[in-house]
Structure formats: C-alpha cells, structure tokens
Image 1: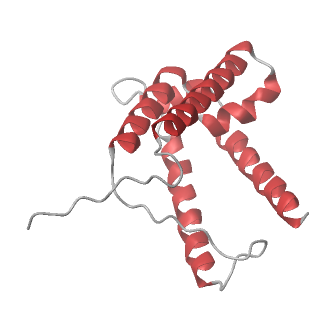
Image 2: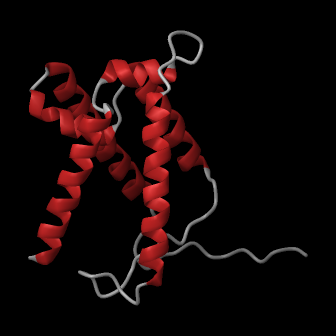
Length: 153
C-alpha cells in the first residue's frame, strides 16, 4: 500500500509542478521552442530548476542503502546511444515542437476534457502499444538467445 500512496503523492506533485510552471500550456511550450520568433525563455528556468532538484535527488538516493518502498534500487544499466534512442528523441522533439505536448503535461491536461488533448493521449497510447508489439515480434524466442560471434582481433 505504501508503494501506491508514494506513487500517488509523486504523481500529484509532478502534475502540480507542470500546471504551476506552465508546461501544460501548448502556446507557452511552442513559444519556448520558437527561438527565431517570439521566444519565451521562461521554461528554460523551469527546466534548470528541475535539473537541480533531480541532481540533488539522485545524489541523496545513491547514498541510501535501499529505497524506502522497494527491496533494492533499479538503476539504469544501459549507457550507449543507439538507433531506438535517437529515433525516439527525434519523434519526441517533433511531437513536442509541432503540438506543444509531451506525455506528462498531456496526461495532466486530460482533466480539461479538450478533444485535442484526448486525441494526443490516445495517439500516444497507440504508438506506445505499437512499439511494444514491434519489440516483442523482433525479440528472440525465450531460451533461444542469438549466439555471440567471436571477434577477430
């Protein structure tokens, strides 16, 4: 139960931060991204503050022996830049620039009931489901991992 309450509290804080900072306002986001026109730099301050808070949070979390509501921490192990990361970043940037939404603010804006927001979230969910389906289809069968080739060297 503590995991659910913790997730709910974190989600509420995140959503409130998005609303207060203006990250849910598509015009504000597009104004920030329009560096050749009427540029609005205010979201840069929001992002910088978020980076500082995140950095401090990670430093404190790394000092803990274990998370509060889990048996162990699940830190990322992958550090390479590969095609899925680059393609995903490009798609994210295009969507954010064209529409002014990214996943967090779009979900927070669902409460408005605006048709454009609902359409964006549905399209996002379909894209995520399609990605998961594609990954499952391309994954090797369980127990049949591809053989590692010997390196020439």
